[in-house]
Image (cartoon, rainbow, N blue to C red; front, side):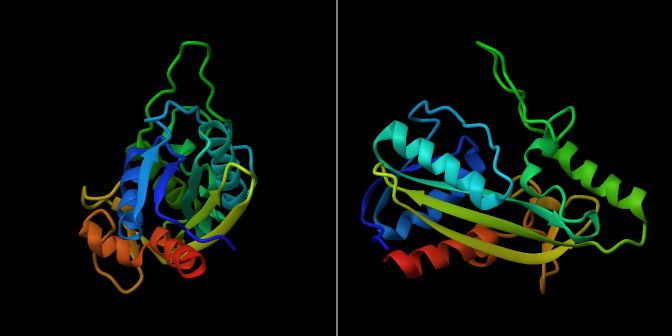
Length: 215
């Protein structure tokens, strides 16, 4: 395994909430994060069939195009009663249309902004349609891929368990945070102080593994 040395590192994401969280987690390790958006790097089609595969393809592309180390995160919400959905399609559930179909923008077009209010409603409505008494158990998964320009990569995965609540609560997080209440807590990620979320989240779990292995 290679060490996580100080210096520039590309965060291979255009999701500003995710970039902010990752930058804060990297802060204590002397890393200088720069986002894919700042470098005007394109977003690859997420054609993997797992979180790990999607993180890998994003990190490899960013490292190849930038000539820098690149860290990619692929994460999502998995609902037990929905057989793990939305899973790797979590971001697509925030777009109008069929979430199973990759979004496409034509030449010169900008992809429609994601609406996680829509995504949260879709999840809850599917649960209600399945059975109003269906389990609300869910978990977040985060897969990290750290790649170097020479093609070397390291991979790590984290998880946090909890349950879904309705209506959404809080505005401190992003994505599905307002409907996810972590196990042992009585508030959602959306209501939680960011420092506390960073301590217990799926992303924090994956980062702990990365730091333990590479520093």
